[in-house]
Image (cartoon, rainbow, N blue to C red; front, side, top):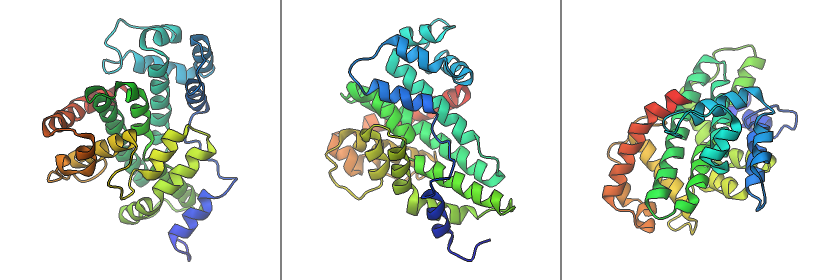
Length: 283
């Protein structure tokens, strides 16, 4: 398909200023910007969401799901914001926009790959939020959800670039799953970090995208350690690839550094497994 190594082609595409990769919904990004400030109002949040009918519908559907609310049905975005809170609604909006991005690929093989990545992203999001709430970091729960959801965004970006190359060449065959995995493994953290920087997303998320695979014994970043630990748990369960049942979560540097015991890690695995079907059907 190309005389040059595919990695070089992908890097060239990623660096192209003309490349149109709508990975993030602009409204979801603006919500994160509003919430990163000290002063914001419910009206500001509602006004942003209702600008997009599709996003409004998706937010309402997710807000009414058993996983996100368990409350009486909400019928307006204002109701959703009042009942769930601004930060929770922002999480739902980001989830909705990401779900759309992962479903937007049309190349059969790459679309299948994206669905695997989507399950991993969802698992990391709900797992990180749960671990924050159960392990004394409740103040980080909403950030944990977004961080878990976005940590592998570079992988989706690379899939979109590969699809663009395949479609431009008029070849539906694309590249093998093995080569795709190699390219993702080599490039997804730095590529994802560059994308997050271009979209001006909060630095806390940018750094997690960049550092979640670094060989660090002690990160000094609690949220990063939590995301890395849940990432291990999802890999153990097979959310994102082949299950790794022999992976001992309690032996990881993240679990030991955070002081998380084996019983809580077992509960984490059960929670992720129980929540996946509900969240996936709701999304």
